[in-house]
Length: 221
Picture 1: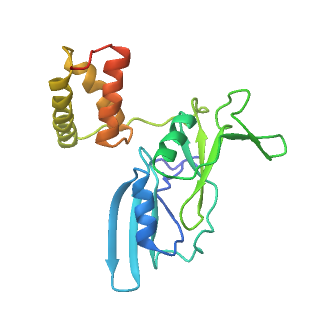
Picture 2: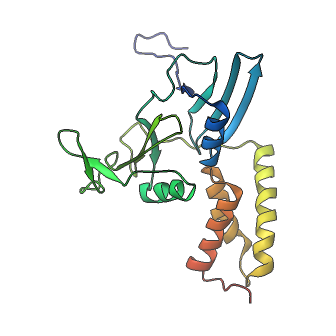
Picture 3: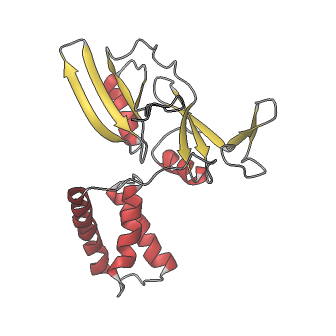
């Protein structure tokens, strides 16, 4: 380990704890967003921690009992970075979430309806709240500033093998109902969507769209 004065110890923000009044309700809400359930651990009547992670996020959230003294609903402006705010907003709306219209901020910080007119990264936003009132912001970032690029994560062999098996099963349905095509053209968008956190159903839909709209594979009659 370097001992120069400029050396720093790696520190990654892993978890943010939210105050909630009903743990099961909060858990159901965040799972309905498509967030991964990592753990649900209870110890006696006074402690329970539920960890959930947004798709492709390096940071998770905790909701539970005895895990934080933060008042329910008091957390605000938690940022969810997305590369397409319109698609992200539409996905949440389809899941039954009350999401604001897209907005940007004026020079004084006040919200103004519509996307950032200059199309700048970090500037187009939309907001929503969980059932307790904890506030979230979608923030569109198509191009990150230097030093802020997500690093790709390699899957281990067992995980990759399982993902390929899953892809094969979903592709089998498509192959039986659609015209001739190359299997790898369907696999690619499916695997890409899954690696970005989409559910198997959403990934299959993305692969179907790729085949039918871009590659013009005719549907079976």
